[in-house]
Amino acid sequence: MVAFPRPTRRAWPAALLALFLAVGCAGTYRYVANYWAYRGFAPPHDATYVKVRGTASRFFVASPALGGRSQPVDVYLPPGYATHPLRRYPVLYLLHGVPGRPGAFLATVRLGVVEDELVTLRRARPMILVMPFGSTGSFTDKEWVNGVGKHEGWETFLARDVVRAVDARYRTIPTGRARALAGLSEGGYGALNIGLHHPREFHVLESWSGYERADDIGSVFGHRPALLRANSPERTIFRRTSALRREHTVIWFYSGTGDEELAQNRRFARTLAGLDLRHRFFVVRGGHNWALWRGNAARAYLAASRGLRGA
Image 1 (tube, rainbow, N blue to C red):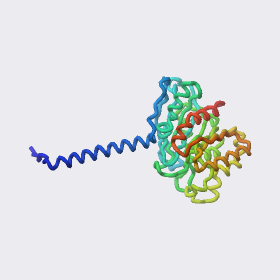
Image 2: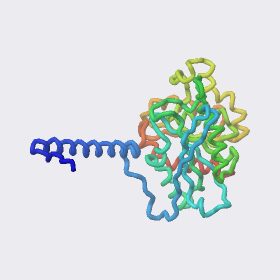
Image 3: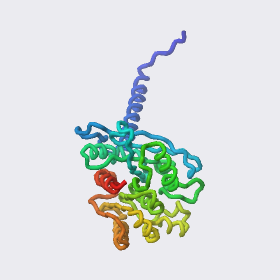
Image 4: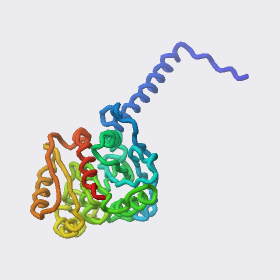
């Protein structure tokens, strides 16, 4: 039998210090992880009147547009999905910003809770929420565009690969008239940019604190002027007017009073009004932050639900 030396008195302080540091590090990790998930807000929970809740899950899409790369896609199935096997649903696609991940729509914006409550109160129709991961890391900026690098087809990943995978996997209404595309910050830009490029694929476009000019993100396009013009909604809108009118596309967007892109969004709203396109723009008190997006989540859900009413 091997005899181990007994710890000396001098060893106890070191052991206690190590234990203290380990507990402290674990506590710090939990705090940081929880803050990253909830951004300082309490974890979401349904109101007491909600009896039937939606369910969250995740699957992966092997995307040809990304060279076969497998990307996670978070999904929130609406209340009643499992108990109504013959029913089909419209889909709300949600694009995150940077830094960010798709889980923030449920954990921070609490959009799943919003859906549960609005559906329970019969104020909105149930929708499938689809939240793809549009990057290779939480802090990697891809802008939801088809960039100039190899296997950088992030727009095609969303508009083709994810949409096809979702329609094949879930009981969707597989038509553009039953799809809404929304996003916050960078995702808001992505929703407008992709939506204008694919007017038959998405009927409602929502931008939460987004932007409409690609000049400031030129690096993803290799600073090529033609690509910058083709991916700036404030410019492409003029070439897509006929298609948007034909599809009766609805553009819904807002900006905070303290957002540096407020003037750009106001200018875009004036352009839409001048072109007589269906749109709604409003300004809300606040900045460019989670409190703003969380506080307007119900309005955004209702706008998508009502915009897809004819589907």
